[in-house]
Length: 209
Image (cartoon, rainbow, N blue to C red; front, side, top):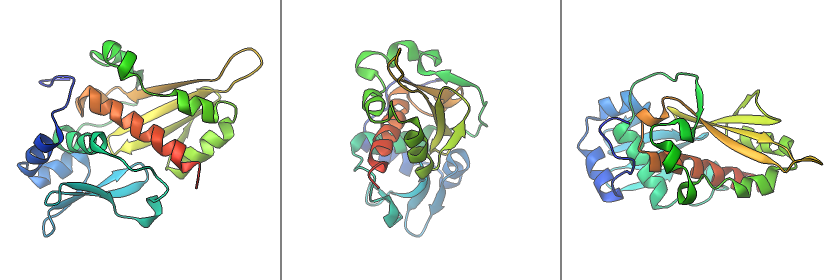
């Protein structure tokens, strides 16, 4: 990424930075909408609309139908603020890359910065059909990779692609995540990781609906 470290600033800084920006420019870059009367943005996250409220410093779903999703905390809000503040008006490349192929991603997505995919493997590794069905509930596009692959628009300019190889008699299940090669232009790497964690939690929660 250009002119940014890998780690996003804190939440309070994020709210201040967003409040200082021209809403028309923010909407153009992020594909959000702005309500000037109520000082709030509406942003599509996964398959649902969320209000990003500048006065209340809160991010809340606009639709009752998302009550099956988990509660998202500070990292989620920082992710949203980072995206609204730093996203660029550039088209998707359509080129899928692993996190390690992003700038400095080889180091950032290791160890404690891993993508926490093991719970998904345990839940869906022997049932790829259900993985696809849960993905469709969240607005996924079905791709043609692995045994099952789905692409989720977690944020308007940040699709992520899950590729699942189901367990069989010889090999355990495997799951990988791919990004559009433009992803690093829109966000810090730690908030890009939060995009994946948000999708992971949503997939696991959506199965309960």
